[in-house]
Image (tube, rainbow over all chains, first blue to last red; front, side, top):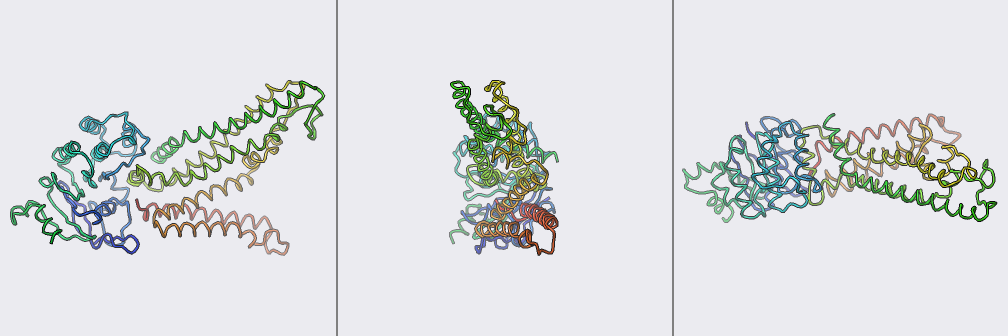
Amino acid sequence: MVIRVEHVHKRYGLRKVLNGISFTADKGQITCLIGINGAGKSTLLHAVMGLTPIHGGHITIDGEAPGKQVYERIAFVPDHLTMPPGMRISESLRFMEDFYKGWNMARAQELLQFFGLERTERLGNLSKGTTAKFSLMLGLGQDTDYILMDEPFSGIDMFSREKITEVFTSDLIEDRGVLFTTHEIAEMERLMDKAVLLQDGKIIRSFDCEVMRYEEGKSVRDVMREVYQS
Amino acid sequence: MNRYLKLVHMEVHRFRYLMLFLMGIILIFQVGAIISVLSDELSLKWENPAYSSVRQPFVPEGMLSFTWVISQTNFYFIIPIFISIAVIGLYIFFIWYRDWLGKSTFIYRLLMLPGARCQIYLAKLTAILIFVFGLVSYQLLLLPVEKLLFQMMVPAEWRVDSYWPEVISANLALDMLLPRNVEQFFTIYGAGIMAVLIIFTAILLERSYRRIGILYGLLYVAVHVMAVMFLPDLLGIGNPDSFLYTDEIVGLVFGICLVLLMLSVLFGFRLLAKKITV
């Protein structure tokens, strides 16, 4: 049970955005794609979700190429709203229930309460932090094997960050494969199992966080300093 | 199928206010014009019962017909119909671009739905058709209401009956909008549907290839417009020395248009499945 990315290439015009990327993200593990802005992290998640074509290489989710057959098994939480702004939260829940067999309404209701989201609120009126919580609720409300998150902590307040971090330590995440991107690891460092460091569309370092701590005595932050400041 | 119908429902739900707004405009313009024309005519007639500005074949002098009223309100019928056509024309673009641009990028969700992506295309196309035929149906329903208004305003001794075909012919916009035979229907609405499909494919080309995609899209539209416009002449329609009869040329053009239409749809499906980018 694994998301496998092999020698993936992607370019926008003449600019290479992904340049031979290869890594795996296992089910039951939290894998973090780390890199500064423009490193290709979001593009890579889009490619895994089949939201942008790639120009070389292969991506498989449990052996299958991204496509309609895998969208019940993998959820994506982008860093912005993916529902019409005129929709109310309650309508978006109905939308998800209508289209996804694996939508777990009971869990979604729990998450609504946990995040303090109002069912009658229009999505267009949500703040950045509340939008992030709403998007996470949509992702976690699906019974999927994997969940992908693009910058889940970007530009949100401290209390929203704490709420989201709490989710990462809960049983909502435990059995799933999590692949998320960030350019600031902060509170996520202790939670991640695997780190993949990206720069200019290439993987410059990939390691198991636990092994790195035991064998080399370095934290993810130490490795980042080594790699990005050298 | 079920998922497609849900998508259609959602798209219709999204333009419901716009459609109601257009329906309101059509009602206000047309009913307002009919009341205004009839009031002017009737006030003069009340002052001088012998007065009549109506000069129409087969209508006794001094009498009023619904056909006459419709012919006198041409301008006020055309304006809301043209506004509706313009709004639908813009909506063909808006139905796609609103999902990419702005605060929400709903296209992410649509593309991640666990079903064939061609359903998104078909749902948007169906929504446009519902929009168009919904307004045409509304116009068809409005005409009897307007006739009733005419009957309520004009005393029975001053009015004569009209037949629907002559009512429709009396107004340029209605004449164009309400075809009276299958050929006319296919010419007007078939050409309209084909235009929508070509624009859909051009939009998807732009959304797939972005900057260079604008060029691809424009070329795609230009090639189709040229093919449709020049094909009949190329085949020699109206030319007595032509190798083919007119009926054969019309059939051939119709067949070629059908092939282009199907290719546009299939190409659109492929772009949406393989090339589209968020």
